[in-house]
Length: 152
Image 1 (tube, one colour):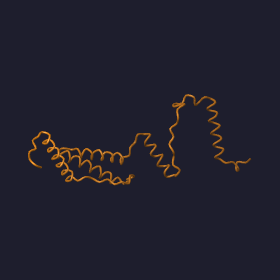
Image 2 (cartoon, rainbow, N blue to C red; image 1 turned 120 degrees about the horizontal axis):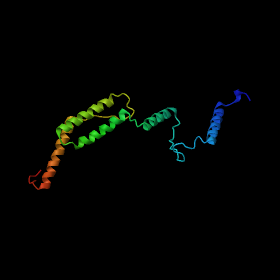
Image 3 (cartoon, one colour; image 1 turned 90 degrees about the horizontal axis):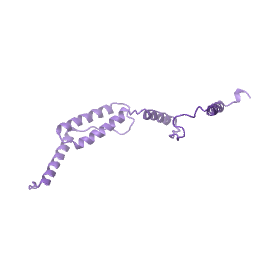
Image 4 (cartoon, rainbow, N blue to C red; image 1 turned 90 degrees about the vertical axis):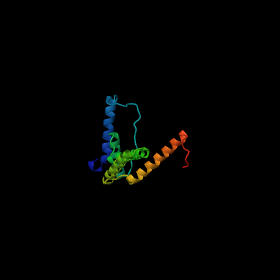
């Protein structure tokens, strides 16, 4: 049989199988970490482009790397939640500045892989929400103490 008629994939697979069998017979796999435990395999996509993304995400996840876009989006969510609980004008102003700076960075990143847009916050609107929140808190405190004799 000539080399022209041989399938190189089959030859390489047989060679690899033979070397693995020899190594097993010699006991080279006996003391491997995780021996006897199931391997956690993830389904790899069939499409080549999806496979490249799959590998990139897997490498990032295995190395505890989070892209800037994801970190900034999470930070914006946390800051917006804190903004909803803020009780001073200075804190509202600081949070609005921090949120808007992250939104600016995110929107000028140029690699928005996540399709949903991010919108900043308006200092005036947040100030109005703060006033309403403080008024509600004050009114609630007056009601609890029994000093609310004036009609609202």
